[in-house]
Image (cartoon, rainbow, N blue to C red):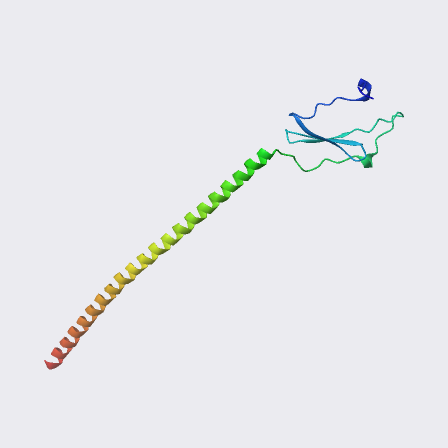
Length: 145
């Protein structure tokens, strides 16, 4: 039956890039096409009824949620994901290093402050003891007079 008459087919503009695959369903009722544009189109290729009857509403296929993409697009996205994961790892290690550095800095500062205040407390105790001795000496002197 080839070539087809113009009355036996309808021409559609669907894909915006080259068509890469064509497949018919097992019952030859639907034609699936995919293209480099990442789209999937489903065409009803059943013969038209001569009586002009309406299409069976239950037999109509619904649109799918899947989107076809090229291998290079998928590879690019996977490379981007890998780079982002690497960046996250680097940032995590940087933050961990900064936290460790900050902790050690604070520990050193605390040790310095403890030493400083410990020395000041000792100085104050020494002053207190001197003042106490001086007071005792003055009391003894007062009692003797």
